[in-house]
Length: 422
Image 1 (cartoon, rainbow, N blue to C red):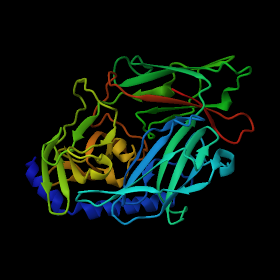
Image 2 (spheres, rainbow, N blue to C red; image 1 turned 45 degrees about the vertical axis):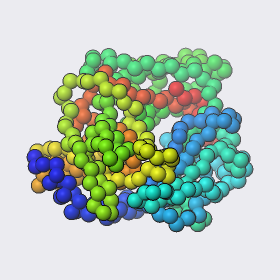
Image 3 (cartoon, rainbow, N blue to C red; image 1 turned 90 degrees about the vertical axis):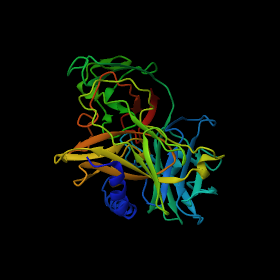
Image 4 (cartoon, helix red, strand yellow; image 1 turned 135 degrees about the vertical axis):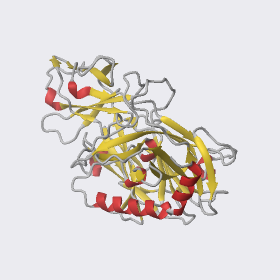
C-alpha cells in the first residue's frame, strides 16, 4: 500500500465535499418516495449537522425528565424552524392517533433558542430546545418522532428525532450468555428475558410486543419474538433463536478535539485553506484476531474541543478520513461506518468506497470536533442487516449494551403503550 501522504493528496484532489453533498441529496430523494416511512433520528438536509439528543427514553409525568435536542445549520443566517410531534407504533411507523390524543398544549411550536458559532472556520448556527416544555408535552406512553421543519413546511422536514416515553409498570429481567443455540463461547451472545406482569389477571400474549436493540442499532433490532413460556402473569423468552446477536468487537475510537495535538488514532492533520482535514491511521481488519479487552462506550459520539469555553458553538468542523487497506474489493456487499455519529444508519455519507489505485476502502465524513467511536460494518447484497464478521470479527466476550422494550396493545386498542424498558 502506498504512503498515507499520497492518499491524503489523492482524496483532497477528488473534492469529496461536493461528492458527499450529492450523495446526501440522492438519499433525501429516496426517503421522500418511501411508501410506509419508518422514523429514525436523522437529518434530511446537507446543511443540518450534528443532530443530537441527550436521551432516548423518558418517563411519563416526570417534569424533570426531558430530552435535550440540538443541531447545527451551516451558516450564520437565522432560519425559522418549528417542530411538531407524531405518535408511533412499536415498529417506529406512524399510527392513526390525532395529536389531541397524545399531546397537551400546542400541536407545533417554534425553535427559538440559537447561538452563532464563534471563532470557527465553518460558520454555523447552533439551535436547541427541550421536550417536554411549557408549550407541549406528551399524555401517552409509546414511541414518538419530533418533526423539525422550516418556514411552516411540515411536509418538508429538515430533521427527525426519535425517542420513547415509558410508564414503568412491569418488571423486566434479562441475562446475556455465550452458550447459545448456535455455538458455545464463540461469536454470538444470546438473551434470555423474563417479564413479570403483576397486575394482570388474564394474560393474552398476543397483546404484548417485545423489542430488543443492541447498541442502539435498528438494522439488527429484534421485533416481536415469540415467547417460549407463558404463565398466568409472566412471559419468558428462553433459548430463543430470535434473540441471538453477533458479539461484534469493541468499538474503535478517534479524538480530533485539538487543532494542535494529534489525538488518539489521528495520524495526520491538514488545512487546505478551505477545510480542516483529519486523517486517521489506516485501520486493520480484525476478523480472525483474538479478543482484546478495551473500554468503549458502544458507538458514542461526543462533541468536544480543547481550549474553548463552549463546545456547542466553538467546536469546529473537520473532514475525517477513514482508510481501510484491502487488497481487492468485496463484490458481494458494501462496507459502512457504524456508530452514533451517523445515527447507526447506513447512508451514502458513511459508506466506504474502494480506491483501486491505493487498494483501500476510504470514506470522508464532515464531523464536528470531538470523540467518535465506530465499527466497520459489512452489508451483503440483498440484505438490510449488517454483519461485523467480515471486517471486525465477532467475540462472545465483547461488552454490548442491550435495551429491552415491552409494548402493550389490548384487543381493540389503537396504539402501542410502552409499559416497560430495561
